[in-house]
Length: 65
Image 1: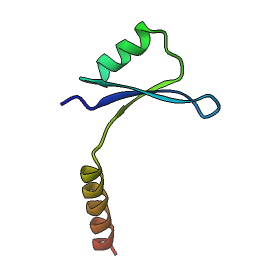
Image 2 (image 1 turned 30 degrees about the vertical axis):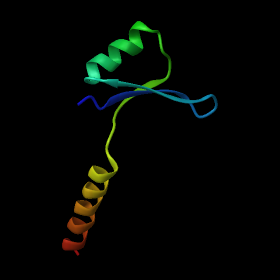
Image 3 (image 1 turned 135 degrees about the vertical axis):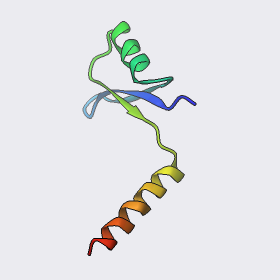
Image 4 (image 1 turned 90 degrees about the vertical axis):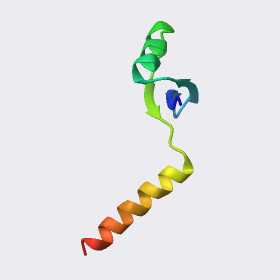
């Protein structure tokens, strides 16, 4: 399932999210073909996956104490 997006813009002008793209290369090609300025490629993460990653980081940090 596609999960790659482009984030375009700036804090002063606002941001726009464009996507979904199949992969980073497709997103970069789209940005270049459309002469977009100030853009970044990012991966979407579901809330469930994000929470699981944070939980694992928390558990790892507690184990290191």
